[in-house]
Image (tube, rainbow, N blue to C red; front, side, top):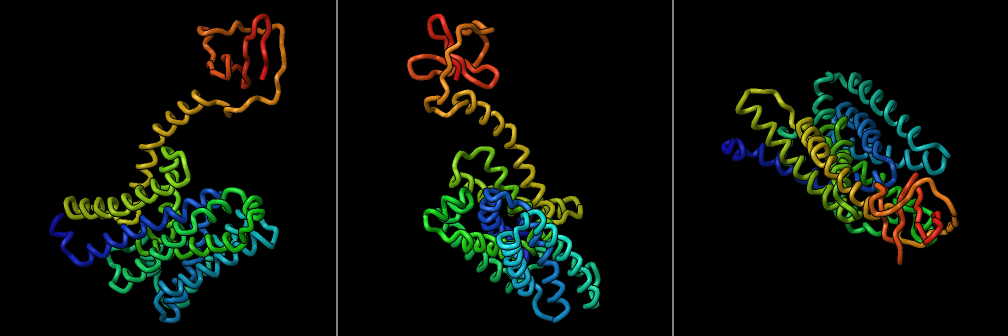
Length: 334
């Protein structure tokens, strides 16, 4: 295994896995906030057409994939913003049109499905020196814009009405996120493949959300998980292939390792959320409704079995989705 790490192709693959794992979750975090988790999948399908155009024209498929994916991102934002069409319908148009166009053009170029397959499922160990510099440059662009514009992009993703009132150009920032997602798709194309690229953008974010309690912490955790899954999946694939002669593709191994991280953190996330709800099941503000009730079905007290919530100078008890506070001979209903 140590000998394998000394080869140039393995070092290039590790570098590609690392920068892809760092960049993809950053944009994925904004997509999750905007409930557009499948945008990466749609753009990946559009990029298939870009790869096929590269095969047909003789231009490097990576470059044509970047151009076509960006055009697809602009198209979907235009359809969603001005065409009064829902986001999932625009994504469906990308799914079907992009994949069908890519397969058809690949056939017209006289190429077999095997040629297209290395782009669909990744071929990180065959990445060239030119491709690695291309990948690193795009990854730095994604990280620079995604982290440098974090306050603006977070505000637009969280509340577009507030962002507009605050003077932000919501349409421009939405378009920027879509374009960065398209660039991310092409960066990850050789690492995990166009059909699995969305997983590397979304799964690390979902994993980080199990433990993080702020947006910055979510991005930081997602980047750590993405980079770890990228490098770890590649090493696991290389180890199984070299030691046991198994055919394990790096792309699926990276995605499955990211999913394993999510499965491992999910129970802990459930416990943390449950503990948080027990401590603060309601916002720490004075309830608007305050109704006095003379009778109640339950005798609330320290041993009644219902959750006790300290509130001001007394204790409320949670029951049937609302709070009761025994005050002398009556109950206050919140």
